[in-house]
Length: 132
Image (spheres, rainbow, N blue to C red):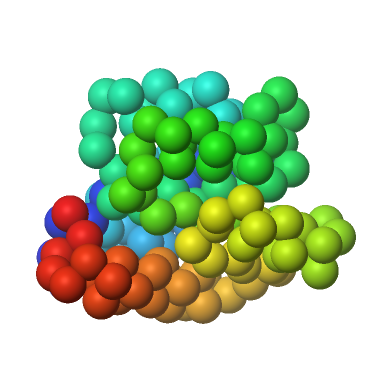
């Protein structure tokens, strides 16, 4: 399957970003990774991303701050927040702050891919066409 969608995966766990990137890459997505909020913003400044999947709890810039920065610079890029800590409260905060979706760790990779695809489907239905 060929897919022209670009996904940025942001997590300070190199192992997790590698596993997610490898899985999504096998399904035809163009996957980029970053290990911090600052490196994610730098990557987005160089290349357009169709969706960002970011961990909430990272050293330095956390996922909420990163989401705020992305929303201010790239308002039409959907953001999916992931975390394994205080899931109930994090989920509530994620949606209050404007996340497009939330996935609790641990998760199945296929579940994450389905969430990514549903976010794109929501974007298309709310814009009346291609979200790009």
